[in-house]
Length: 215
Image (cartoon, rainbow, N blue to C red):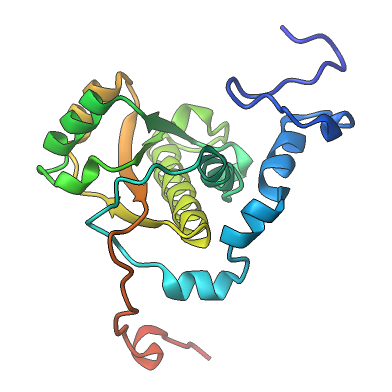
């Protein structure tokens, strides 16, 4: 157990940068990860949110080029900033590096081959974290919303970093849980990497058809 005043960081994310001496909580490390705008990072980072939204496309063919660790850090940190019910963060993320597990996930995701991508993140619901006085069914609902928002934030972060993604919702939840070794219920798999080819924006519904205004 950490002593009073001692800085505690997530395992594997201990800071290597000396300018975090004033850090008192994990939030400080989060700020370091998301706020790092060194020259290398600035060249790859698109900070225009609306441009990122417009540019995001699902990719089913990934290049074999490995994704830089600092980009993975930012993608995971982005998920940590997603809004959640009561700020209890009723979700968990499983970062799958093991190639054999990735191949098993392909089978558990209706044999979609692109699930075996450079970066594979499995988002799971964890309603036990949501400490609110509501029926269990409502806590489960909050958890799936939390996990979904976290995955969406990761997806946008990946796009901002010049990567492409595909969201996998067609999964056998029981098989996925067995593969990654958890009692939690998976909600989605996010596959990330460099695309073989950049895609152009596709037509969307007219906003006048999508938006319903009640006056």
